[in-house]
Image (cartoon, rainbow, N blue to C red):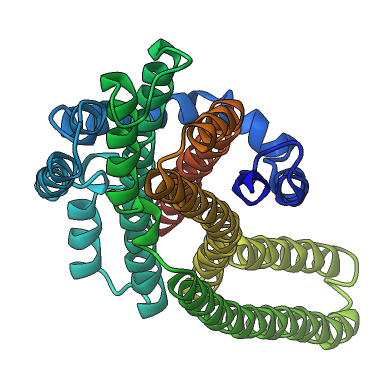
Length: 385
C-alpha cells in the first residue's frame, strides 16, 4: 500500500531515476560554475539577499515554522503576501543603468524603437526574476513545516497513538497546514513561460532582421566610398599625364618642372588618401546602430536560454512540491501511524535533494540577473560612446 507514496527523489522510486536524469541534463555547466565565483555574481547575490531578508523579516519564514493549524497558516500566508507587495522592486536599486538614466536618455536622443523595446523587455525580465526569487524564499520557508514535523515525530514514543499522543497530533497538524499552503511556484504556469519564450524569440527575429539590413546597408556605403576614392585617385593620375606631356615640349622646364610637379601632385594625392582613410575608419550612424542592435540581439538570446533553464527547474520543483502535498494529504486523511512514519522517513531522506534543486534554481535566477545587467550595461555604453 505504501508503494504509491514513494517520493520522486526516492532511490527506489521509478520517478527518482527520471528526475536524476533531468538533473544531470540541466545542471549548470562549467561556464556558469565559473560565473558563481566572479565578483559581479557575489555582489549581486549580496544585494538581492539583503533586500529579500529585509522584506521577509515578518514574512513567511516566521509564520510557517510556527504554524500549528491550517487557519493560522493561511492567515500567515496572506499577511506575508501583503507585506511582500509593499517591498521596493529589486530593479530600482539593482539595475545598471538605472531606469531614471535610461528615461532621460530616451527622451533626449533619437534612440531606435527596437532598442527602447529591449530595455523594456529586460526590465520585465528583471521583475519576473524578482517574483521567482520571492517564490523560492516562500518555498524554503514553507518547507520548514516538514522539518518541524520530522523533529516532532522523532520525539514521539514508538507506541504512541496518533489520536491521543500530543506529539503525534502536532505532527498531523503540521502536515495538514503544509497541505493547505499554496504552492508558491504556481504563480507562473508553463503556458506563461511558453508565451514568454515565443515573445522573446519573435523579438529576437526582429532584432536580427533589422541588424542584418543595417549591416548590408553599411557594407554598401563602404563599397561606394572606396569606389569614389579610387575614381578620385585615377582622375588625379589622368590629369598628371597630359600636364607632363605639355611640360615636355617646353625646353626650359624639360628637366626641373616635371620633377617638381610630380612631387607636388604625389604629396597632394597622399594627403587626400589619408583623409579618405580616416573617414572610412570613423563609425557612421548606420554602423553604430548595427553594433547596438547586435548587442541587444545577443542579450535577448542569452535571456531566452536563461529562462528556458529557469522554466524547466520551476516546473520540476512545482511538480515535486505538489506530489509531496498529495502524499501528506493522504497521510493526514488515513491517520495511520505506519503511513505517517513512512512518509516522514521519505521526506527526511529526499528533502535534501529537493532543497539542493531549489538552490540551483535560485543560482540560475541570480545568473539571469547578472546576464541582464551585463547586456544592458554594454548597450548603454555603446549608445553613449
